[in-house]
Image 1 (cartoon, helix red, strand yellow):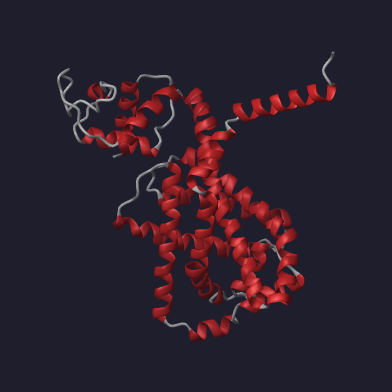
Image 2 (cartoon, helix red, strand yellow):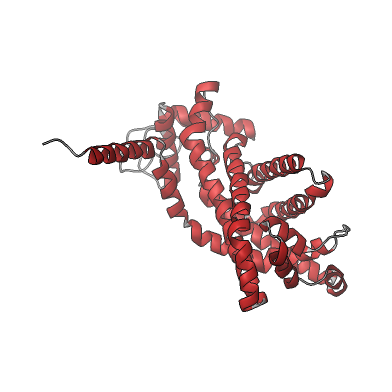
Length: 360
C-alpha cells in the first residue's frame, strides 16, 4: 500500500526544516539565549532605564534649545506614535521649562551617578554574552563615557529629522549609520577592546535592524494600546505601555549581541580565516591564555595537559611535574579554539600570546 502523498510531503518538509535548523546552527543561538536568560535581562534593563536613565534624559531633553523639546518628543519619535497616543505620552512628562526650573546641580550629579549604574549593568550583560571576565572597578570611567555617548546618540536620533529637513531617505540613512557606529563602538569600548572590530559588527547591525522592527511593531501594536490604556487607566496605563516598549528595547540590545556573537563564531570567523589565513583570537581567549603565560605557563608547556590531572607546573615540561589548579576557562578556550581552527593547541597558544604581546 503506497504512502499518503500528504504524509510524504509533510515528512520531507520536516526533514528539510530540521536540516536547515541544524546546518544554520540556530539551536546554538537558541541555547545561548536561554543560558543568558534574555527575557529576564530585558526586564531588568527596562526597570533600570525607568529608574536611572529616564530622569537623566528628562533633564538633557529639557535643555535642548529646539522649539519642540522635552523627552516626550523623543519617546514619541522612538515609539513611532502619533495622534491621541502621542498626546497621552506628552501628558506623562512635565514641561521642559518646569524641569529646568526645579533641577539643581546636585540633582543633575545624582541622576548622572544613577545613569552610570545602568551602564554598569549593560556592561555586565555584554561581558556575559561574550564570555569575558568582569572589568576592574577603576574602569568606571568607561561606563560614564558610554553613558554620555548613549545620551548623545539618543539626542541625535530624535533630532536627525531637523538636520535633514525631513527627507525620509536621508533621515533613515543617517539614523541607521549613527546607530551602527554607536553599537559597534560601544561594545568594544565597554569591554575594553576585548572583542575585535570584526566580531562587534554583526551585533551592531542586528541591533539596528531589531530597533527598526520594534519601531514598526510599536506603531502597529503599542499606539492603539497607549490610546486605550490612557482612557482606562490614566497616566499609569501610558507608563505601563512605555515600560513594555523598554522591555522590547532591552531584548533587542541584548539579543542583538547574542546574535552577533553567534554569527561571528558560526560564520564570520570561518570566512575571515579563509580570507586572511587566520582570525584574531577572541578577547576571552587572549586574556585567559596570555594571563596563564604571565603566570609562567609557556607555549611549550600549556599543551602538555594530563587528562583529568590539571596542568603541568609553570615553566616545567617534566613528566613528573604535579598538577596545579588553573582557571577552567583556559582549558575550554584552548580546546575550543583548536577544534574550530583545526590546529594544535600549542599553535593556538603561540598565536594568542603573540597577539597579546603585540597589543601590549
